[in-house]
Length: 158
Image: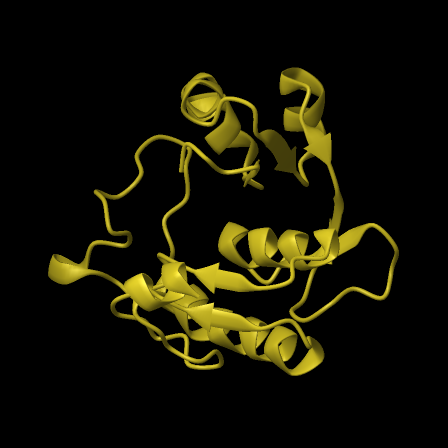
């Protein structure tokens, strides 16, 4: 998203593989991670993280929720977002059993396993119960049911 004000990725290997592309694509954005090594190597903003779903009780700390999408949402809420629109939060294997909307990652990048896909909605549901911030899910097909669904065009209009 070229107009994004922040880009978050937790995985050190993702930053190793995609840092240069992220910088070109999201010029002017802040880059965030919970990985100390990636933060140091690429001069990224750093936030502490801890296991679990929902909100952390520790200052300047987000919960991991098992995936970077959860962490990006937690970071947006940590920043004080007034409203959040989720896009690409399908939480299920795609057509032909692919693990993303794109081809599976190769190399050292991780692909979600069935156990991950079962656990992730639980972490999001914990977060949904704890926040007053309006969060809507504009993902076309999703297993994530804890946030109201909305068409993307409607989300962008309102």
